[in-house]
Image 1 (cartoon, rainbow, N blue to C red):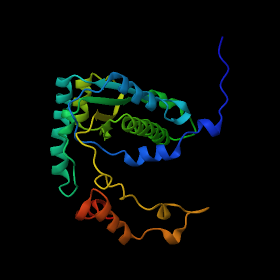
Image 2 (tube, rainbow, N blue to C red):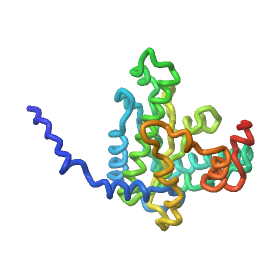
Image 3 (cartoon, rainbow, N blue to C red):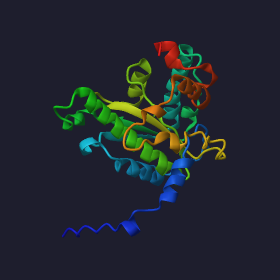
Amino acid sequence: MVAPARKFVPETDAGDYDTLLKIIRRRYSVRSYRPDPVPDEAIEQIIEAARWAPSGANHQPWEFIVVKDRDRIQRLGDVFRREEISLREGDTKFKWPQYSYVGEAPCLIVVCADPRVKRVINRPRPPENREKTFLFSLAAAVEHMHLAAFSLGLGAIWLTIQEIDAYEQELRQLLQVPDPIRISVVFPLGYPSAWPSLAEQGIHSRRPISELIHRESYETGRMRTEEEIEDFVRTSTLRGQHGSWQQEQEGL
């Protein structure tokens, strides 16, 4: 006999916003890990959080490969190191991170996606809309993973896989991923070597909320000028002091 659904009571079940915001604000991208193994229970808790992410039409495109074998992790890390060299050569002005940490992480969670379920997002929506919904759904799952990891005292980073180059093909071979399954994100996971201070995390580098909110409609008089955008790119993003890549490369 199926038990009746429990009634949702907002006053007791809605949760603690302050605790949630603390987790959101303290989450950061971890690039240095202790060698301590990550418990299987923690990994399953993180994936449990991911599977409750929202997805378009509930199509749930995600699947997860958990990699803990040291040799396999190091071989995957070597692919990322070689990609890093290629990226630096392609854009010398961008502040590319070093990818050596991938091979040093005690665990990798590889987020895969099955594009065949995109068919649920049916006509009259165009194909590009299906792809957008597909990717947004995966992003929601990975964000849940980040927050769950921090709540368990673990650190992680989100590495988006470019699905059009030779490095992606190497990853597919190492992980034995069949077509048409796609590799979306590699998620190194472990206990951080050290927790940074709030200042080191750049917790105050977010744009103030007063700049982000428009009331009733977009307030065009508050749209940032090109000069303000350029200053933001130079001072608050990984482009750093090297100017706007888009302006230089695309003539914007």
